[in-house]
Length: 407
Image (tube, rainbow, N blue to C red):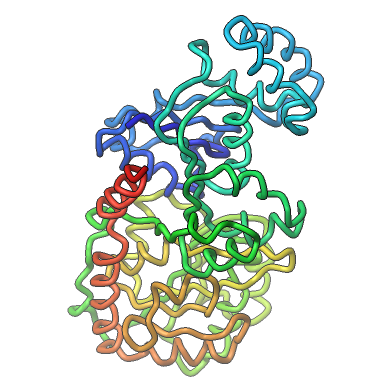
């Protein structure tokens, strides 16, 4: 199966799941190309990705190149296309094809695929995030690529983007796509409300390689020592880390409870100040950004995981944060909010507890409910079982390939 994966920046440290899915498709025998619409953030590929040859399969565009530079290149690019397909050349620049065509962005994206026959032929064009799906749809409408269109949605692309860019932004893409694949049932409902045909929408979860997040037996730990809650993610509003810090401050009667919040982002200085202002700076560690292996080590050393996510002021939301599943795979119980897809992984009093968004007192009481090592161990074993059963990466890659194989 020849697959074109269309994504935003690539590779990105914050979107390892995109790289993991590409690697999984390669490992399953697919012929994969990655069309990156923007440069990555400089993060490196890991050993497994390099062994599969993923770096050599990335075709990098620069959709944010200045307008003048794009338009300067447009006549030559369109002329080359026109030698094979005058119709595709016209559609790739015509205002009737939309502003991405008339601004040279479609040509910018297509040029990254290199020279070759027009249209470029693929069995599947798989877009990561809704906005990339729009670009893929327009490339296909212009006759520059062919292939059945599959679009994955992960959170902000259906919770925030339609508010900012208009509710009709996905209308043509919904019409074009053969599969619309949100990673949670909550997002599936939002997509149907936004006009996605119900028969095209089906939940496809992101998976993890459970071997890379092995179960950690915590039964032999010193119960009299400190126990640690960990949270991981970009330090932005929707992650809700402020409320975790405030909850820790309310648990002065649990001095052995420590917290590590891994990640970086615009709110990190503000969160550090909040911890100091609430006199819990000595109980809360903010180590900054850590690589994949370092995050795994932090999870293995933890006793529970927190996912205090909230709806941001601009409407941005999570889908189902993959790090929640990674934490579960190591055997951690989870305290989370009733936010988007989190309740689809965290089952109350089975492998964790759920509270309402921004409920500091509720979050504090949930953490108090995990003060018992026996509870943490019991629920942690259930977390591992759920991760293996519902979020196994190879199983989900196989499911995706079977879905695509149905004409």
